[in-house]
Structure formats: structure tokens, C-alpha cells
Figure 1 (tube, rainbow, N blue to C red):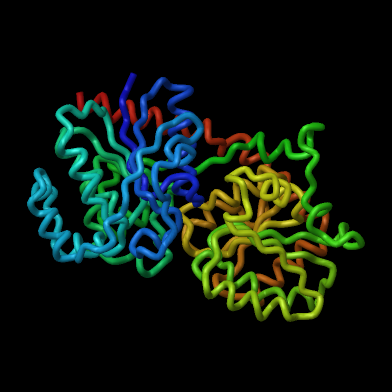
Figure 2 (spheres, rainbow, N blue to C red):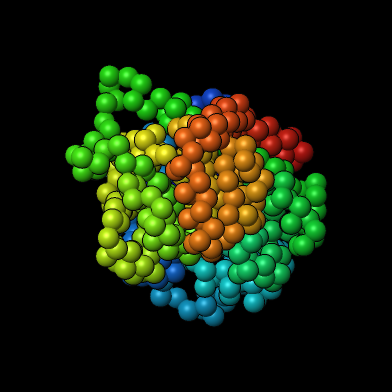
Length: 433
């Protein structure tokens, strides 16, 4: 049995691709490959809490949050009130920290990004014996990466990072911050394009990068409505009685500019000029910018918008979310901030076509005119035109959806991802022996 330490930025009930990736790896690797995995993370729920005391955090010793699907989760409070300089000086006094050879400017930036977990570093350094064979962290550029490197140095064990590097977002191109990725023994990239960017633009060694795509619990999405036990229907519960045959356009993700949520909202007036009988469903954490734009779009005649936040859902596989995917006519997420885009896999698993942005890693994930369509990032008119094209062509929707479903079932299940991750772990552990 190998002992593995997981150090994600957040963990369930936080819901985003990076958190869910670690959750499924921990669950599958424990069940299928006999790993013992310890999970240490912050108490943040939303992204705001990573650096702002006004964000949502898990309070107290909540049993539900300290154990997720039979795996113990150790959550440490974020130290919001410490200054960057005070935190920097404290880190410099930490054993093994200086051997990382990181600049003061880089450290300050990571402290600012949060979640600052000096108490977690202290906890690990106080342990008399840490018996981990390997450490794995996610995602870039947050402070838990520094925690993982310090712990790795302290026990002389390999450290892996899955950065979910959003290379099409300008704020990720800071060469100062990139230096930290060179300190890891292995980087797991989600796509070949991510690997190429890390090698060519940021001089990461090629032999230190392993490409492992993301996954989906295919059977769960594919089998919605297939049994008598699962007879909940989205349109039946949320569409008006006389409008149950109207089309459903779905977005699922953080509702911000980077993910394309604002673009989708702004595309709605153009779509309604051509197609009146359509509902737009948004699922994901809100932002002020989204809510502001939403208030304007909702005033339009014929606009039918259903808006869910994590507070409206019971978990990652909430029946409202599952049935929304299964009953949708198409999924649209024209994002520039995705290292992969797990939501595309979920849509394909449900058998529906997808629309993504022609930027970053997305063109490697979506095969245009084979299993989805691509649009220009931040272009509401282009997005509207592609949505209209699919809504008006049932044959094309079916063709793209079936192609995506086949691709996912053969290549992108979490079990396949876990098998590749297991092999990566074993190779690193053997080299370190």
C-alpha cells in the first residue's frame, strides 16, 4: 500500500473542475488500487474566501464536511489577517523553505493569491514521522503549491502538481509565478497543447510533464431517466406547463467573464430574434457582473432564464443538474479559462452537442463539426449564431451528440484517468526508491 498526500486548494462542497478531479482520484485510487490517501486543504468554499475573510468558509467541526464519501478531509482555517511581509518573514524561518530557492516577489504573489495556510505548514513540520510516498497538489497559482513543496523537501519525496494552467488567460503568463512549476518533480497537463505551452513558452522540461486528460462518471449521465428509480424530469418541474416542448440551452460553470457566462447572457437577445421558444438554464456560482447582466436580460420579452447556484443544489450529482444535462438540446460554455473543461464531457455523456471557444485548450477538446462547434471568445453574436444553428438542426445536434458520447465512453471516464494517474505515481515512486 502506498501512502499519498493530497493538498488541493479546496475540496467538496466546493464545486469546480480541480476540486472534483481530486475528489474522484482520491475515491477511485483508494477503492481500486489500494492507496491510502490523506487529504489536507483549506476551509474555503468559494474562491473569494481564498483571500478575503468575507468569503464563504466551512465553520466549526462539521462531520459532513470532515468526511466525504468515506474519505477523511482535514480542513485548515485560512489566515486572512496576516500581512504579506509578515507571512514572508515567517516562511523564511521555516525549515527547508530556503532550499526551494523561490524569489521574494513570487512568494508575496502566492501569499496574496491565498489561501495562506501557515498553520498547515506548522502542523506538518511538527509531525515526528510523515510516511508519504508521494505528494500531489492542485491548482496554479495558489499557496497550497508552496505547502506541498515544503512538505516534499522535508521528507525528500516526489511532488506532483496538476496546475490546470489557463494559458489563454493573460494573468497566467507571469513568468515570475511560472518559476514555481519548475520545482515540481512532475507536472500533469490536461492537454497536449497545455504541455506544449509549458515547454515552449515557459521552459518546463519535457520529461517532467505527463499529459492526462480529465474524466466524467459516464454511466451516471448516460443513464439518467433509464430506471424507474430515476423519474425526475427537469422540464416537467421548471418549464411552464404549456412550454415543456420548448428548447433548453444549458450553461454550467462559474458565472464570470472568463468562463463565457456573460457572453452567453449577451447572446440571448440575438437568439430570441430567431427562436422564441427556448429556455436558458445557468448552473454555477454567481458573480456580481453576471447578476447585473442577468437583471437586464430578464427584462426582455420572451426571455426565459432559470438560474441555479450551488445553494440550490444538493451536490455534484444533484438531480436538477443531471436532468438539465440530459434534457438540454445543447451545452454552451465559450470559456478562455479552462485547461480542459469537464462540463463538456458531462454534456457528451448525456448525449448532447457542445459549443466552446476557439481559444486555449478547447480546440483540442472539441472537434469542430464532429462533436461540437467553436466560437470566438467574448463574441455574443458568433455565440448566438452557433446556438441558433444547432437549435434549428435536430439532425446535426444528434450527430454531434452521439459522436461526443462515443468519444467520452471510450477515452474520458474517471476510471481511465485514475489508471493513468496510478501508473504515473508508481513510476515516480520507483524512481525515488
